[in-house]
Structures are given as C-alpha cells and as structure tokens.
Amino acid sequence: MEAAGVVVAVGPGLTGRKVGDLVAYAGNPMGSYAEEQILPADRVVPVPSSIDPAVAASVMLKGMTAQFLVRRCFKVEPGHTILVHAAAGGVGSLLCQWANALGATVIGTVSTTEKAAQARDDGCMEAAGVVVAVGPGLTGRKVGDLVAYAGNPMGSYAEEQILPADRVVPVPSSIDPAVAASVMLKGMTAQFLVRRCFKVEPGHTILVHAAAGGVGSLLCQWANALGATVIGTVSTTEKAAQARDDGCHHTILYKEEDVVTRVKEITSGKGVEVVYDSVGKDTFEGSLACLKTRGYLVSFGQSSGSPDPLPLSALAPKSLFLTRPSLFNYTITRDELLEAAGEVFANVASGVLKVRVNHTYPLSEAAQAQADLENRKTSGSVVLIPDGA
Image (cartoon, rainbow, N blue to C red; front, side):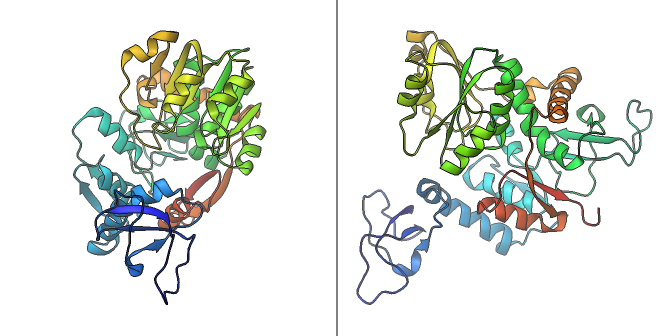
C-alpha cells in the first residue's frame, strides 16, 4: 500500500505530472509489489529530489499516519504528556520523534530493553545549561554551575529539566554552551568508539560510513588525530569535501563507486582494521568484506534498517569480530561518564574536534527546527535556545 517511483506515462490531458517525475503514494489502490502500477493522479505526491526514493517508499504510510495523529486527530502541543504504545514500532517511532519535537513529554511502552534503547534514541537527549537548584544534601554541584548531559532522561526540548546529579557533567568555561549541547551525545559516542570499543592507534586504516554525518564527522577528526588513515563513504561531492576537511584521507562516493573495490584498492588488497557502520542493512555485508583478517565491524546504527541475520560461520574465514555497542553501556558508571565527556571537551578546546553549530532556533520554534531537519535544510548541529535567553 505504499511505493515511490518514477512516472513512465501520464493519461491524456493530465497536467501537473510528467514523465520522469519522482512520486510516491500510500493507501489505495493496493498492489505496490510490482515493477509498474497505474495510479490515480490525485493520489500521488511529488518527492523532493533531496529524499532517497527508498526512504520515501518506506515513510509514506507510517509518516502520514504519524502526521495526522499528532497534528490533526489530537493536536500535540508543548507541555502535553503523551503515551505511545509500541514506541519502537514503525508508526510509534515516528510519533515519539514528532511529539518530542513539538515539545511534549513522551512516555513509550516497549517489549524489550533493545527496543527501549531505540525508543530513547527517538527523543531529544542532550542539553547544556546552568544549574538553578540542587537537591537537599547534594555536594559537588551548585547553583550557577554550567553543566551538560546526554542520554536518559529524555525531554531536553524544555526551558528547565530535572536531572539525576550523577548524569550531568561540568562544562569547562572555555566551551560555548551551544557547542556543549550539540557535542555531548555525538562526541561521547565517537569517544567510546575510537578509544574503548576498538582502540584506534597510529598506523591503523579505518573505514567510516556516513563520514559527513554528525558522529561520522567526529570519528574522522578523532581517528585522524590518533594517527590512523581514514577512509570515509559519503553521498555527494560536497560531503566528500567536508569529510576531507574533517581528516578523511580517502573519500568514496558510494552512489557512484563500489565501496568494497575502492577499499581494496586503497589498502592494496589488505582491508581495514575496523569499520564503523551506522547505516546497517545497506552496508552490512560490504562492511564485512572490507575487513582484514581479525578485523572489527562496529555496527552502531541502522539508518537503512536492521541488517539481515548473519550466521556465526560467516565470521570464521577471516576470524572477524562483530559488535553492536551503545553509548549507554559505555557510560554506566560516573567515572566512565566523566572520562568520556572530559576527553570530548578537551579535544574541542584544543581544536582536535571542530563542532559546526550552523543553526540555532528559539525553543518556541522547535517544530520548525524539526521540519527543517527532516527537509534537509540544515547542516551541522542544530541547537534550540530557550526563548529570551
């Protein structure tokens, strides 16, 4: 009941659609398991050129369902508290993201801890600000301190937030609060990936998928500073230029080049020590093929969907290692959290990490910020500033 594709013919006298247009539809008529489909012209919608057809096909039905539920059926507004059952499901995930962007507090029900982690990822989970009150008997924090946090609890689309004292970290005076807010989650993710999950060292060659993305950009900068040779995959020449500026020694335009072939060329057939893969389904098999003997595949995201099941025997020919880590399991203790955040802030202060805060919005315009993100009108980090601050 949903699909996206290119118009190959139009009916006589039809205006507004032409051969070659990229369009999508959801709902009736059924029959999208087909190479071609005859559809009523008034039931298809144009797809912007910035949207991948596969994304358009997958989001139409779920996305429009989420849209009418939070915008029309019941209009979610700032300050509302909502409950979403099956919060990690297709529609549920989009509901959480959309309602969170509209300023609501989102409670979600899930069946497993893995799905709980996914649902938490669908909310705004990092912020920086000044302490305005502390609980009775609390030491180590005082009113006026600049602090930041990333992770649980969700709800940072807010002017004030009550947080567990052991989950906030001090922000050095040399770090701009907007930078601190934008770098916490991505920066600590990059830290545990290159310093603990797989320890990148001088002489290593690594592959970073989505090298111009939020985490990918920091991974490239950090690994380059550690003395590694960095290969990055990107979708456009503009993103390739950014990735090179971030320390990529080699960039691969994955829409035009075969990634595995290029990696083998760059490494003289040896492969890489580690692949950092946040894409998932579309890159998983290729990532394994890019590894050298005893290499590590660090699968830390799945923007294209969950990879197909893999038999353990597939790792045997090259004695490969496969891990699916999360930041929350690498910052369980207070000491781990402080170490991760401390390294991030130190590298920002020293210039090792460049953080691009290209867009700021008043908190009251959170919905517009979310819309601009969804429509790819932004680049770098987007930060919400409380109104009047």
